[in-house]
Image 1 (cartoon, rainbow, N blue to C red):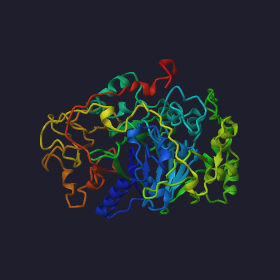
Image 2: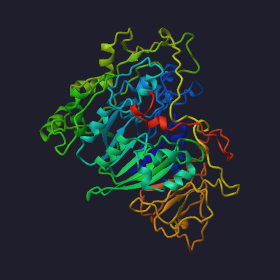
Image 3: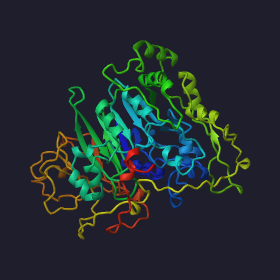
Length: 552
């Protein structure tokens, strides 16, 4: 099975699908599934934009609304998790997951699904210590605080994932698990992102709950995004059955950036569709009493050696769930439009009022499992006048609101606002975006390589003596005698000059095909002139706990 993994989508669906189409044409192999690691931005209309935590200058419709309206259909089955730049009002309709449009599935707060026998777990949002113990208390319209806290992960969702007993193949999170940088080439990462150093040294870069899940679940693969760089690592586990996790973080969708990878993985079925996971359904049902929609801290039982059998579904409960679903766990294709869709040719004269909609997909799963819809619970207890609406499809009766919220959050949409780029040597090779697989490492004077060296156990190693591979974005230009991988590089002409290199000799990530994601087809108007950009980001605010400083 061929799976494409995308870092931060930032609403660029057309560019992502067009790039994948070129790769399919060049390789003559179909991509079966696309996984997106957050910042998807499922914006249906301008009101959704106002519920997304980005500065006003970055509020653009992009292209999702075309897939929502039916003007376009996603050519590849797509699964995504939420990040920290999302249309949170829409995603709040689907706390347990669901179709945001035909062929594109959101995993909800947390979820486990199966595709062709491959078990995929996901955790939406980013970690923030101040909100981690709280319930899911946010609902539209959001204020300046809740528009950000709504995408902060909560302990109930991590608790549920920790209850999983059956092996997981792939885990998705938006921010990185804490400490994964210790199992890859950390110094190379710091040369590219030097402002990470203080947080690495204080162990504040990343998500501690995600690190706990990594240690508990020991998945075969873990994919993340958020920090706008590409980084690979291999995390060893003291477990014969699950000895290691291969971690890969990917960049955002921009030219010349490592935002896309292709993974070849053995599947147990040729039928590619999404299925509910019976163990996960049992966990949702058994932990419903622990769900909180309050701002107060929601303290949960600790998970010990007994694995809290009262929350983990028993064999008998799995049998009952199987009967409930008639032995068929395939996710029904029951997407329906719940809000007006943007139409650039026929914009309403009046502004559309923000309304909240109960999604029939959530209603169905809550009815089947007898669990709580957090949004319904919140609005039923609300003292305000906002109520759940049934969308009738008549835009003329709605008006746009103008709820503008300033966002001073962690990772900007534009790197110029958040990070200092490393100036490169002024050579012809500095911006060679073709990928080479280099077994022995580049020459010592390649000081600006953006590549990450991994040994089999994830520890740093001597570049020249390493037998393991790393992806060399600059290219070592070694002769065939010293670099026996280079003969596998293909230079056949394709519309976007995007070579797909299959490395059959690599030891660490043989499943991954290195992709040059600077395709013309996905190129954006951007000045790629190397420069030293001012660092304006205060990364510490991302991970500090309540005791570390002021509330965010």
